[in-house]
Image (tube, rainbow, N blue to C red; front, side):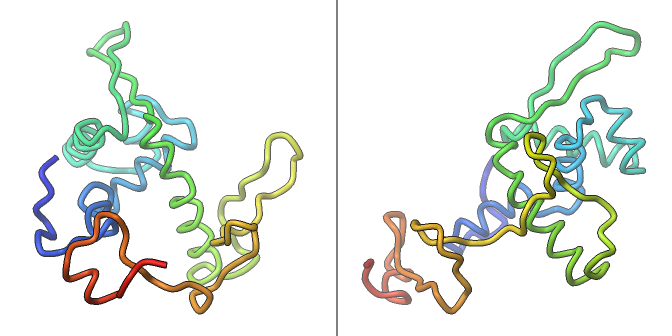
Length: 161
């Protein structure tokens, strides 16, 4: 996919939003995490217009987040499954869900809970951690230019650690 929505920004967040920033896109990915595979399942679970769903699924396939497989049956059915790239969105969807549970619907009112299949325990809140595993807050992190930084980024954030 051509990256042209944010052409002046050297930023991984901006590049990612070009592929997953439209809200139906992440809801389709969420449904795939929950087991949806067929067009009709996505349509029924999301109550989304067919043309919008078709366009978003095509974009997810084009961007390598999902793959489409023709299956046997009437009406030219297809399965949609997440690629490794799409499955890597799992922590993002969980973090958004947990943020919504806390700040939108309210603590103790989550409409959906996630459990560890092995232990049966509810999963813990997503957090950013140091390499040692120590939880980090915004105040604990500093920003530095990375290997793909342009001159503007290097000027803005200084030298790497």
